[in-house]
Length: 224
Length: 224
Image 1 (tube, rainbow over the protein chains, first blue to last red):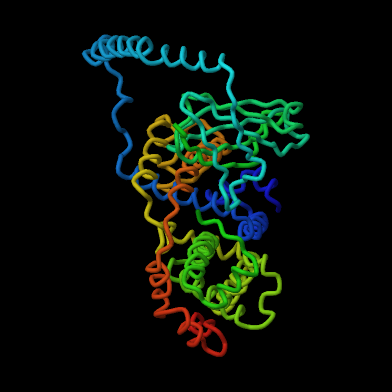
Image 2: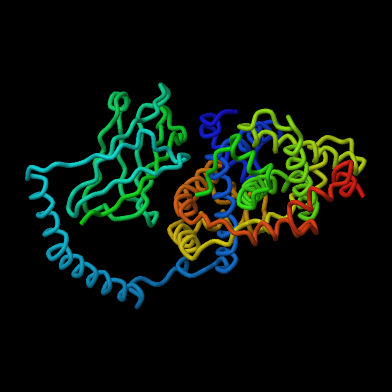
């Protein structure tokens, strides 16, 4: 079994769920002991399951929220009040923070500037030296990425995660675009210092599961 | 980061019983071996014995000239040694039945965290909680039934109106969300973990472990 095959069949999940037939399990284990990507995946999955067990044990089933309440109960009224208050807060936030920031970004985008792009072409996650991108405040992050392509895929999905693990953005790339190295832009307001991750997935023609093709990690430093 | 290149330099450090390399080796392959053995032996104690035996044989083989010809295939070598140790264990128990039959008679050994599993950081625990919170009640119920109550997967999937593939995708998504933070929180090298590992077999340090090897390897110890 090679890495692409392991990704294609979702070997890690099958292995962790003990769903693999004997022969396949042995084939995957042969690969697993040699592939650090898969080993990391399995170890992370094992740690995740271990912690999920603890969390689920701590929260017995039949927890609240599922019980039906009469229409317009005090809960619903409280919720409506909270929603109205939230909307007010959102409105204020948009006017005082979001819109001014967008204005600043548009102004920055309209002005001539020299922007540096960081190359991830040699920066797959198993490498030792992590690419470093230094960005100025208010400037977007530009990255050169070369996608591993395969005829099986009708599109490719690029997913960015911030240093805290939250989703920073997703880009869908056509096979035509993927033929050449891409210049990818991450908006300025999504950029903060820390280690980012870019996952590249292949989307098959049928509605089958997507295949993870590569993961890139890179360090972002705000240069002020 | 726990990525290491398994090459001549790594093997050479391992051969020289370098503490840091030994710790990485024990931690990295220890978890993989534990996963490999979890459904193949009847107790965690036996799995631990077999893991120790595998380590001892690999380290012994490295001391012999030509013991490992292709240093970049260390992982495959560890896997094959583990297979041999497992086979000998089955034989020593007088079991000639196939692994399949054996597994039917011996349910999975405890999959609770073992001695080598690292304690998750607060950030990792927080991410796991968030993952569970963001799931629907049905998904949490599914995980609870499978991981805590260890119910039949087909039965619970049928009850909740989902396919088996749904469970894999659920685990895959959760794992992807967790993987980043897991990777970022890889612990620094700690010698006490190595000492703990070695103490499991009653050995104080790796050098004495090798010196104490009986002529026929530790197999005689396991076979008792």
